[in-house]
Length: 234
Ligand SMILES: C[S@@+](CC[C@H](N)C(=O)[O-])C[C@H]1O[C@@H](n2cnc3c(N)ncnc32)[C@H](O)[C@@H]1O
Image 1 (cartoon, rainbow, N blue to C red):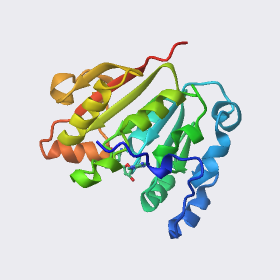
Image 2 (image 1 turned 180 degrees about the horizontal axis):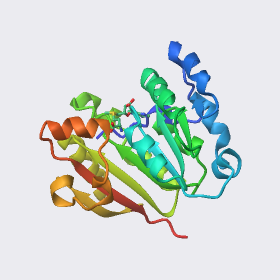
Image 3 (image 1 turned 135 degrees about the vertical axis):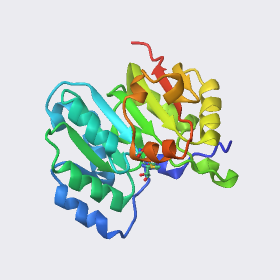
Image 4 (image 1 turned 180 degrees about the vertical axis):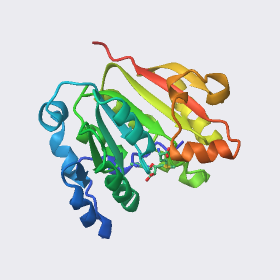
């Protein structure tokens, strides 16, 4: 495993792009934050953004937003932040979110690697990470988000006892995650399965299917799942 830290993780990282959807996303400035904009809200999500005390959840890689739309609609009492860095996908999701019945969410066009610049220590209750890009070629494995440096940041921003929920279709990435989890002591592995829908159909993680999950299940792929709980002392 490559131990090199991605520069996206660093304080002085700058987003650079010329994507026309960056400007188009400003149509939804009431709830969309682009690039570094979200970082100004570090430590203030509940008090100044949502203006209410509530559980704060983050989803990394919302994609077309099936989980974000459903979960935030079914759980109006939760403050929900979804993020993804793909522009066209973000714009498609923002359009759908603009018709959402509640105001309990924000959407970030941002990189998951920057979680500690967007959220203060112990600010988050939950992180969701579903069907991340698996980067299957060995020379690309280092691009996988789920590595020790990221886990350390997730630990920082999660509250004591905070949860990190993960699902993947990819055997190689599932094995990789298992190895990362076994080699750390920041989180306790509370649940894991290599065949979620057959082994644990009653589990929370089997109570919804994301867009990509439906495709993978249709191909007969077993879904790998993990639930990590922070060991941070309270
Ligand atoms: C395979 S899709 C899964 C989307 C959705 N979670 C689902 O299950 O339908 C992976 C998504 O993660 C996003 N993504 C990958 N790496 C990311 C990162 N480092 N930060 C933010 N988003 C990322 C991609 O742009 C893509 O939309």
